[in-house]
Image 1 (tube, helix red, strand yellow):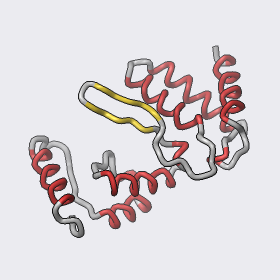
Image 2: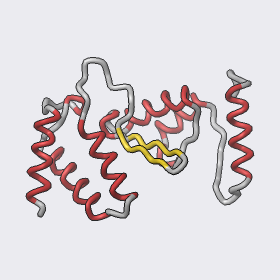
Image 3: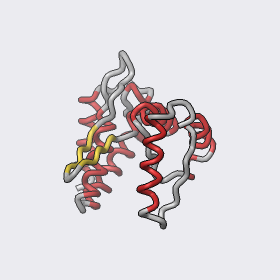
Image 4: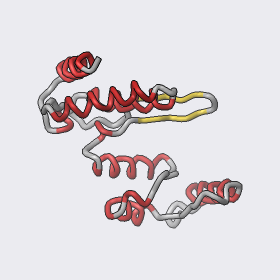
Length: 160
């Protein structure tokens, strides 16, 4: 709120008001450039980040870079009685969409739905497929979405 005093100031004021209703949850105000440095040097310090759209896009891209790219980051949007699991926007130009992001989102959705065993199987198959060297272009490989999916299917059926 040091630059965009009205919009970010209102966002910060409302966030502080709501935080007062939950005193057991530790909160901290951080300016976005300082947050980026803290995320790079000590990412485990944060459990949840609350930002507006502009800074959320910047911080989200930074965090995706910390874990190997957007292909490793599912998108989860929460609304009143609705949860949407999917892939984040903003694929790199010239880079085909990766199925890995959607598989991560499916894993999170399964766990949220109480299907922990299925989520664990999906995660194990995903890690095994990557360990086999099957990687999509966003992770430095050459596998197409179809060939990655076929490798995942082989792993999932082998585990039955």
